[in-house]
Image (tube, rainbow, N blue to C red; front, side, top):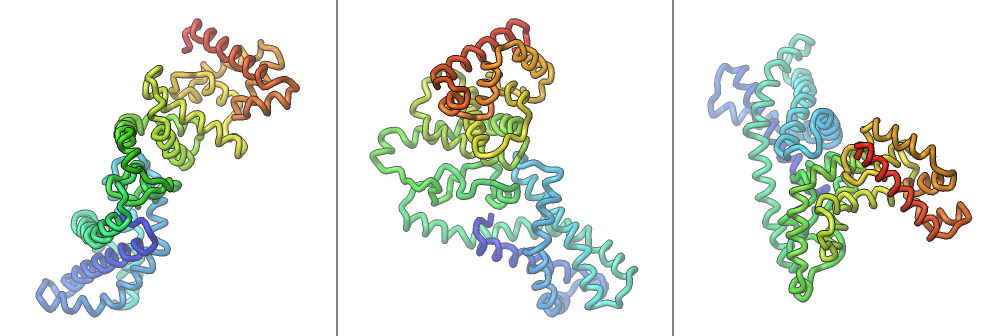
Length: 371
């Protein structure tokens, strides 16, 4: 699906032409009482007027509105087909009354009743035409047009397929635009990380690492995404951190020794990236939630486990002031050097206090059956 502005313009133009032409033929058939060869010729006259209007509406207004509406009832982790159909459904629901109003004003005797009748008769046909015929046909044409260009670029750059998509899905529409619900693109000729894998690197196992991380992605993508959502409380930020997590996993795949489960390893990477992000902005969750998540190693929905958080709060209240301050600063992502400077202790002392306090919390919670 479209990845650049030019591709988006081409895709929208093709979709507008096919959708408008089909609906004009339908309306002429209703007005004349049937379909003949002359019907298709007559439709070309109105197409010259309605197609540009439809293109401008969809490209600048309706497409953005439809994406926002669609993601009120679908999630980025849903199947790409479900997301695409949901957006197409919303586009029809927005475009149909608007285009029916324009057609009523231009080609019929304008009145409220005429507009309602036109809209009511057009909507079922527009949905069927878009979801079952026009949409799949336009996507097939679009892939055919840009497949040759992609092959040429790949040959010119002599680059192997990249592992991640070109665009990090910072917003929900970006996920749909890539035509993929995840972060991997087996055919993409680009390399967004600015590096190429040489033959020597391939011989050293670079390809094997990529295949291994790709398998991990397919197996644990949803788990990592849900975990990041529980940390950030922001699906958009969770999408960003999800891509960074698997990039870090790819870069550090050779160092994984199997001392923990693969899922725990990935969750650890995700948590570290999240803690680093807190250094750059004010946390959006409470200290108690941060502490509960930081202490819990099982990486479940700890932030929602009120019983655990209440007990963590009670236990921390029994610790000395310095330990509480060290933990408060640490769960907000502050490095030990900075903690030491703030509390007038060495970085090593801050590290020891944090480690002992965390071990004590985990041991106590485990004995009480909360972990």
